[in-house]
Image (cartoon, rainbow, N blue to C red; front, side):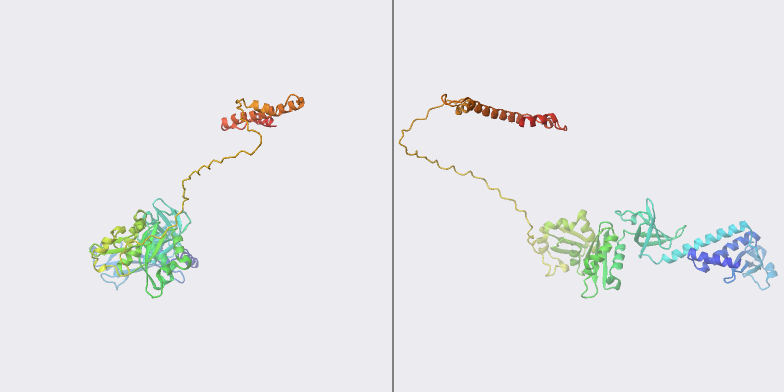
Length: 486
């Protein structure tokens, strides 16, 4: 029986992932509650279990007071005279310990009481273990599976069956989560609650991007490259400023990696969020200039009293410097800590004439007029020249051919219908007239005229499918057309 009891303790140790002493203390509390309920022992009942053979000892404890009138709780206190009957060595203020020989804890009711107390003690022990494990891990990266998606939060279960909460304000608005999905997040805080510690995680904070860079870039882990600032609008764009502590190391190139492999892994984890890696510079003017990239900055003037940076950009790049809905300028202001005022190139001359104080641009950053824009390929349109009609050719006089015959005046022939000249053209003199030849000429002309008239009628007559849309051609009309042609 005692061996089975020890095996049950070991099984709880493997299932709950708790220390053996924690489990023994929980069982002792449950057994003490069952013994007190069964035997109604006075005082505070304590049960101890031997860790090797499983033997159990039951003790009761009571506080010793001088007289009976000093007793506030009869169950927990005892007067000095009665206490010395059990132990003559006790005195006022000491604790009387009495051992009880109990072999049988009790029946079904007592066993149920012990079970409830043990389970409650184990739950409290689990909560304390979880709180102790994660209380110092704020700011670290955790991975887990989405257990369920609720209207205002997402429950993510870590590898040790610990549940974490991702509230709506800590989620990326563009992301959609599904049950069973594997996600990474940053641990924000660990709170004590009635139902156990509540671990809050986030994917929308700038620190999440910082931790991802620390995981992907070995130079940042070794301390060669340092992240000086991160500004983020979750789901849209992030600007991160990096600095190299070692000469010869390109901080921007180290973060991007060969063929952009390092930063591509981070972009994939952020589901396509755009990341701008810029070089941090101790000169605030240069830092502001880098923060507003990819726009070209002509001049920067910083007012330390108002913490304002006034920037001049080419007129054609004003919208690029501001960004969509002011996003580029807003992120640059968060990254640099200045209030950035972006103006077009038309104010560059005024900036050049005014006194800039200690933040005057260095010779390498003169304020100059906008450089000529790069030639853009322009699609050449064909030039349409007005067409001039060629001059008419000069009239050519045709000299009459020399002949010995006298020139006769042409007779004026009256216009007749089109059919008559054709008939007259083939008319033969009566002396040489042949009936077969006359009939042949008339048949040819008449057949040609009939065919021409049929073609004209077909050309003027609308087709069946053209007059009524949506209907197919009439087969009978097609047949008549073919019959007329052949």
